[in-house]
Image (cartoon, helix red, strand yellow):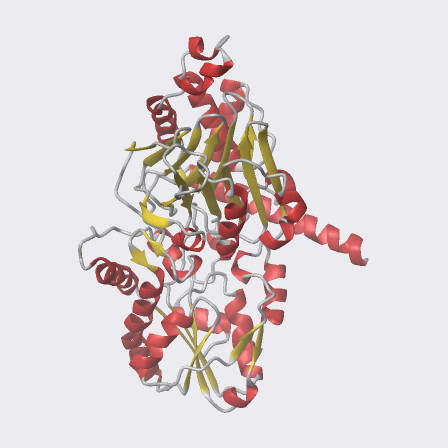
Amino acid sequence: MCGVVGIMGTPEASREAFLALTTLQHRGQDAAGILTYDAEGFHKVRNLGLVENVFNRDNMATLTGNIAIAHNRYSTAGRGTIDEVQPFLISYPFGISLACNGNIVNSNELARELKAGSRRHLLTHSDTEILLNLLAEALEKSVPASSTALADEATLPDTLTFDQICQAVTTICKRVNGSYSVVSTIADHGLIAFRDPYGIRPLVYGKKLMRREGEKETALATGEAHMVASEGVALDFCGYELVRNLEPGELLYIDAAGKVHTRVLDQRQARHCMFEWIYFASPESVIDQTPVYGTRLQLGKNLSNIVKRELSAKGFHADLVVPIPETSRIAAITLAEELGVPNREVLIKNRYIKRTFILDSQDKRQKAVNLKLSPVKSEITGKNILLVDDSIVRGTTSKKIIELVRRAGAERVFIVSTCPPIRKPCFYGIDFPSEQELVAHGRTTQEIETELGADAVIYQDLAGLENAIHEAQNIATQGKSKKFKPCMACLDGKYPTDVTESGKKFGASRSAERKLKSIEAADKKSLDYGP
């Protein structure tokens, strides 16, 4: 899960890309990068760390041009080194840059095919590099050799047509198994963006008018600037008007003259990832016509009857509803309203600690939890506390917070998850590729309660989750949009794509990578601090 941005048609492309990345910081905190293009060629700045730490006045000044793509990284594949920070760049054909949000399930097979069949030597362990090479190879095949060989420089922009780009991206849709929302630039031609055929990862498109009376001609003849991004919050902040979400399997191409071309290449039943509404997306975003904020309100409302039933069966009652900041706050509002129980912010967050779920090792997550939250003991002592979390994945954070609240003097501690039990691995960009690390895998609710040290663990049910998404969608669109079946494979095992063999290899390779990163982190710690 990452954040991607593509901008074309403004001399402020790099600045707007920086601002957009800042609004999408929640989607990835491991690394960030921006790449631009102008008459002098490609320019890029990328590094490990948060957006504000990667970019400064000096390196931003090198990012010239009216076209830019940008990326926030949340590391689910590869080894987390600077070599794997996106955007990526390849020189032939044309000069192509690319950034991706998603995960490729059959990346191992594709890497072998590229090496053995095409003699393409990959330089990283990133599946985005695989996508870049597949696109380069497909474009090379779709453009006749006579169009590029010995071509005069003045005619180069005319050597690539929209049909040829469509042909190349269609090849990717056929070969690639997984989730991908892609932004890419092709030197001297324009900006392209596309989603996988199931639309698992989000991608939105917007534009704004640049040319005003008395001002100089803008970079594009149309006088418009264009932006594609993972979430609408980036468009809003930079002054772009949302046009629409890209459809599953749709390609958008903005050519050098600013003309917009679109075509749906390979659309299947939409399976947008439910975790966007549960956890990942920013509350003010609207993902595929479904407001994130509205969905989270509905999640809390739908949970109320389940909570009443479960607590009553155990002979318990709650004195306070306490959200575990930040993502669960919205659901806690409506849950408390429906229960008639006060909603209190008594876990105070240290805002300088990363989102613990997306940290890349258990050790890092455990230490971060200890620094992340401080309880208000005066409000907790002697009370039955109903904790509300967006989800319970590995249980590391939940267990630590329950211990924290007990030490603060709580009489009883219950924990409620707005997401149903996560029992299956995710192969599409959420960082739990192995079911063995999931606290709900192979355990009953009672066993989970024992593992977490809670007096009660209460989960949203599958119907409640799906209904919350659809109800928010209906309210926002007044019932005019078509319902979709969200991807809930990590809950029910119903994967949009075939993961029988590739998924096993994917999970094994990701587990090996995670183990290697943990070993490297331990080695670094011993070098830095001694044994």
